[in-house]
Amino acid sequence: MGRTVVVLGGGISGLAASYHLSRAPCPPKVVLVEGSERLGGWIRSVRGPDGAVFELGPRGIRPAGVLGARTLLMVSELGLDSEVLPVRGDHAAAQNRFLYVGGALHALPSGFRGLLRPSPPFSKPLFWAGLKELTTPRGKDPDETVHSFAQRRLGPEVASLAMDSLCRGVFAGNSRELSIRSCFPSLFQAEQTHRSILLGLLLGAGRGPQPDSALIRQARAERWSQWSLREGLETLPQALNTHLTSRGVSVLRGQPVCGLSLEAEGCWKVSLGDSNLEADHIISAIPASVLSKLLPAEAAPLARALSTITAVSVAVVNLQYRGGRLPVQVMLGGSWLRTLEARGSVLSQELFQKEAEKAAATQLGLKEPPSHCLVHLHKNCIPQYTLGHWQKLESATQFLAAQKLPLTLAGASYEGVAVNDCIESGRQAAARVLGTEPNS
Image 1 (cartoon, rainbow, N blue to C red):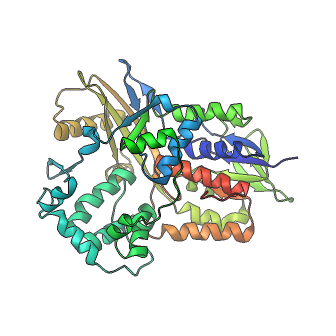
Image 2: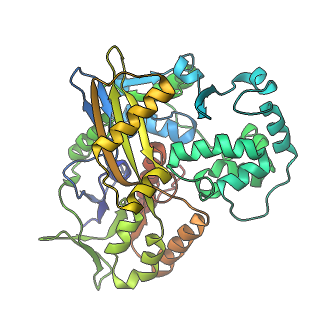
Image 3: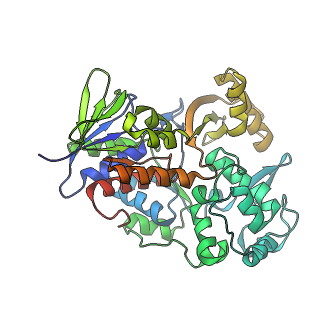
């Protein structure tokens, strides 16, 4: 009788892991267990009263790099090519980037000429930051905060204005707490390999073989900056669910896991409240802190390491304005939301809507009340890769290897919070279980 693999978590990571397991030449029996009644995790799309699509989570996926190409390949395999809505490189949304600093929006410089002249909020041309970067020696520490790394290599203005904004936008986190090694591994590796970020990126630090498909070639030719799907990004997890069902994968919804225990013969017993599952191997795509509470006593050292990987909450507010073709999406989180939570404040929809409307009025000049508003609070949705995060992962990996536990970790808690990262973590988890090469 073949092996049974139970995948915990029906977000995009768990769906991707199940997808790649099910497509193996000799697939194991796969059971996907999701605690809630819906699949897709933080990816959720809702139609407004006038037909506009409101994204309650991520609203676009970047096609760049190997991971972006692999996601597009999966989209093609699912038959979704005709549903893709790209933002091409010649579109204004792809060419214009802004920073809101000191009560004003500032366009970020683009092109080589833009680097040679002062561009507020920066006090001098960014060319000088690039020159400093090229002449700065390689760092000697095994890890560093994002702010410290950027300040050392690019100067205090780039660290405080650009990198801090980037950390808030991607991680809803503090650049003075987040790890450069774990949050931006390509920058860390570029310095380690080539002594310089710019040289490393120019010479292709970490570049690997690229997958190929008609959709991938189109994305490159048209220089897509990101893409979505016609009916919303939730179309992707829905298509994955349909595919899994057609492949014989058992998808259990509304079945929160209550505990995990190891049987005498080395198999897992997965407790689901009023029933149990047996598994030869588990892929956990649930948050690390949640998994830490489910592990048996024999895995206490692993549970301790996983429990220290924390996450922050983010409120997503979609505002529809009369005459506007697309909703305005405002994301509220980070230290502001953590402060409110610490005070025990009531996190009401009214509070989030008020803050979002204030931001839209101040930064975009949208003074009139929105015609429609949709608020969604994602609790503990973005893991925080703080300084030394890599050591937690190394500790977990060493424990799993030493104890030969049939458990593989996947999901946003470990090596990337973007949709592409999560899909890749599911793919690599499946490859490890199947005994194939994860990077192939």
